[in-house]
Length: 430
Image (spheres, one colour):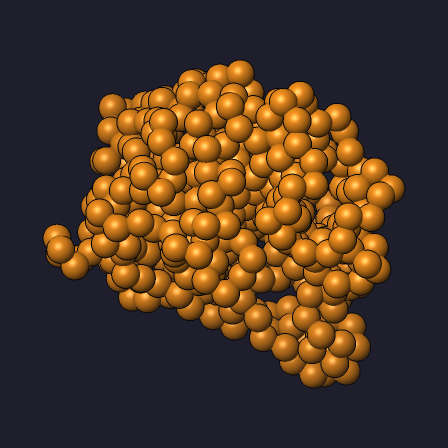
């Protein structure tokens, strides 16, 4: 479920040119073979499409954040021919597999199996039919360990885009769904990842996450033959808008179920006014989704206040939640902006979608689940009730259940994408 916000559209990388800056290529040189040459021995799907290093194939590296919150300790391991490097200096390597190893960050630097090895850029990579592991999940490519302060660090998987997508599709879609649905998802997911790599990633240590805040990614363990077939069939294709020769990419968000009408991107974020993101399409194709319509969800005002304070520092000024009012909505009744009135009478205005996300991220206890903000809201005393609910997720861009419904009616991947992102076209960029 692609949910991050960013600015769009953005210029495409010119064809025929490397997608990685030279300095990045040098850093990745030790592990590029691991990113592009790992085959079936470490995963259930077929081998990579491109049997060449990144610097020759042009397939970009995507950096996936595996730690939603920084960690103080991690269990890592690797298959055969692993290499652990600290600032370009070999710390450990072997033709044998790396057993489970505890990694910590001390005052003087990294601590591996209780032994201090020093500070610096720490990278675990492999080659020749092998893989790296964090906790219980196997990944292609490399693991980069990035200090965040106070003895904690993040773990980022550097992996080629096509392998990354193979680990995404089967996590985003049901395995029984049709190839056309998988093909459409492959192009939408590649577009989303490459867009974030070229925008968000320029100022961060990673490009995308591995959960619903970005795209769900399962590494090698998430790959299937069906996901690989879709990746191979759509190799290098993303959605673009504009005339041939001056195409631009844009953020192709998607969600589980739109509930009957595709939302425009401006419902949930500041977005460019381009045709593929305006929404408004009447979607009858997601009617088989279990969340096409859902039962009312209730949350106490105390829980809502706690979630808001945990997300927004300014929410403390409210003192508590007296009530919530819809400030603006779409023509079909989907709330866009809501006003939260504090127990002291002070107001706070946020997007309806941000209210839902605050409740979910802070683990608010709700009776039934608030699947979307395509619903109505009423005050019932100490609680708020969200009722007449439709859909699951933000409803922007491609509706995954709708895509499957279209595929069942004979639509191709291209036709599915044209319905949900009108005015766009698939463009091969590498």
